Image (cartoon, rainbow, N blue to C red; front, side):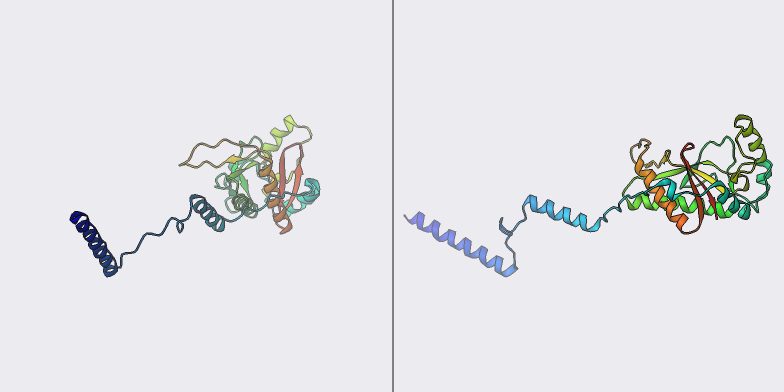
Length: 245
């Protein structure tokens, strides 16, 4: 009996001492289970926080009609080419000597020049700036719409006199007065793109995605509306044919 009494007294003393220590040193009690967020609530809060800071991708709209949006004929583009272009270039060696008139464009983070059979990678500065701005705007638009980056593919640029002669051997309809002769005109493919690979990530496959074409159409439409170029939608060649203005 005495043992039980001593046990109760000792237990009460210990509880009293612990309570005094807690009060003296300001030790807080852990929150109750009902005050802690559940796992579901934690996930919901994390999702809400992420959604708050991550901007919503812009919609992809494209254009209503390619032919109506990019109707500029050869005659219209030729007038602008003659106005802003250079005199005829004999060959690549001649183009390299025209440093005050022509810019070498086969190096850019925004586009890639395709293997050229009947043209050489030179443009007048005004057209080179336009091509650069189109490529940069395309990158910005892809990023805003939440799509991986792709570089544009330039398929035709300045055509020299030698190029015209070689082309006419294979194509009797090749014109001797093409806009490409003046260094003001270039073609951009609308069904081929260069996938930008992440050097620290897995290899990404190259894609042919209609979304990439729709976004390119939006960019080109804006540049045309700004009065910077004339554009023709080429169905058979699979490209946009454009001349600076």
